[in-house]
Length: 279
Ligand SMILES: [Zn+2]
Ligand SMILES: [Zn+2]
Image 1 (tube, protein in one colour):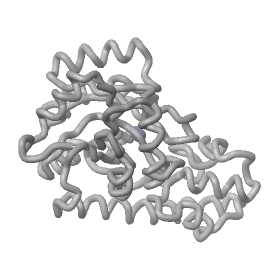
Image 2: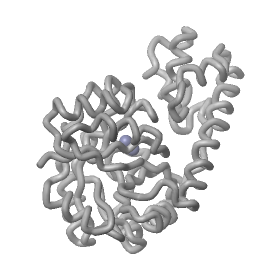
Image 3: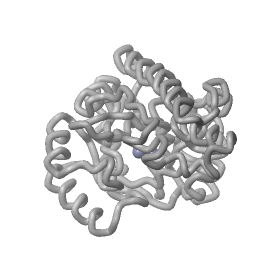
């Protein structure tokens, strides 16, 4: 059984609509796919309709901040209508708009001629984010390609036009997901310097009800995977994997990383009210 527990669609910053993501997942020979868009479940209904023989694991990737650093928390099988969780999601999404507007203002101050309306038009129905601003910047001719926006000159973390955003404390995120009947998995803790999570931080999160840690991720080295596997074993966390596919942005890679079958079953067994509900 092949399970990719981390893919994005155009409901957040992936390039393809959920139905197309599911079609590519089928072509990649996957049995289970978790759609994990950033801070939204808006793509799940379309993905479910298009799932065909694939098991769609409903998910989301929550934006968190720990000790001043950005951290991503994958969540699965929660009830998105649980009032407290729904309120936090609305707050995160509202803040994304305020923040994108503030970045557009800062860019204007730096001589970049883009408007909020252009950015909003590019984002369309998606949760607005920096990739949409980057595309507007490239369209305006300020930079040659969207990728160039992600430097300290522009909107990379800490960049001249960067604006911080509201993010959840990860322990609170874990609590919200569990209260909504789901499980939380720490996303790519060793994928990059900006989102590095230490052993000590993972240990603290494990004590607050974290179910798993993402080990098999394209941006994590073999050495870091080995360290994370040992840590997961010590802390009784499930070691998951996923491609973090973003469509053409990441060169179409669903199934490029997967969660071992036993780990997937272990994860399902940790859903608070499993038996009542499945993927
Ligand atoms: Zn992430
Ligand atoms: Zn992701």
